[in-house]
Image (cartoon, rainbow, N blue to C red; front, side, top):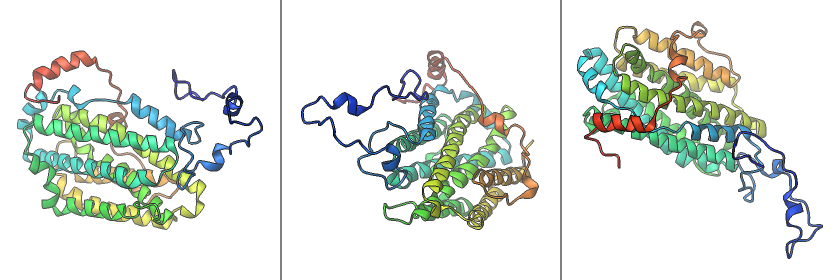
Length: 360
C-alpha cells in the first residue's frame, strides 16, 4: 500500500484484498489465493495480468519515477537575454565548440527520446518500471523544448542546428552507430541478451559517457561567465540524464539477476566501450577547439574517466588506468546543483527578456 503523502515510504497493508472482497456476490470465501507478486511480476515477459503498480516489486524503479516528478522544470523559466550578448563575445574557437556541441546535443536528445518510446519501453512488463521509463520520455521532451527555447532566443538558424549531423561525418558516425544498436532493442521476440546489450549502450555509453562528456565544453564557458543561461539549461538536463544513468544501471543489474544468461562478458563490455570511445575521439577532435581552461586533451581525459566509471558501475574492470581520477574537479558540482526558483517572479523576468517568444 502506498502512502501518497510520502510515496517513497513503504507501508505494509493491514489486510489483504481477499479479506475485503469475500463478502461480495460471486466471490467465494475459500477462493484460491492470488499468486505472490514476485512469482508473476517480471521485468520482461511477465504475466499479462500484472498491470497493477502495487504491490511494488522494483522499488528502485518507483523511487526513480517519484524523483523524476519532483525534478520537474520548464526551460522558459530561464531568461536567455544574457546569452544573446555573450554570444557576440565568443572567440572563433569558442563559437565553433559551442555551436557544434549544442547541435549534437539537440539531435542526440531527440534520438534518445525516440529510442525510449519505440525500443526500451516495448519489452518492459513491470508497471512501475514502465512508469519510470515513460517519465524519462517526458523529461526528454522537456530537453527538446529547452533546445528549441535556446535556438529561438539566440536567433539560431534551426536547420543549421538540427541538420548539422548530416554535414559533419564525425557527428553522423555516432548517430549511425546508435541506430545500429537500437535494432537489438526492438521487438518482443528479439534476443533478450541483445536487448540488454542495447540497454548497456544507451544508458551506460550514450547517456553515461557521450552525453555527460559533451556537456562539459559549455559548462566550462559557463564557469567563465560565458553562455551562462545555456549552461543553466544544460545543468537541468544533465541532472535528469544523471538520473537516467542510475536507473539504467539498476535496470540492467535487475535483468541480470532475473535472467543470468543475459549478463555481458567483460570482454563484450570492453569492446562496446572501446568502439564508442573511438567514435567519441573522432568527434571531439573535430568539435573541441582550444579555449581558456578547456581543450581537447582535458575533454578526452574526462571522457575516459566517465568510461571507466560506467564500466565499474556494472562490475567490469576499467580500460583506461591513467584516467581513474577525475580531471574536472567542478564536474560533480555542475550536475549536482540545487536551484530553487520563485516561479511567478521568474515568469515576469521571462516576459521581459523573451518577449518575442510564444510558448502558449
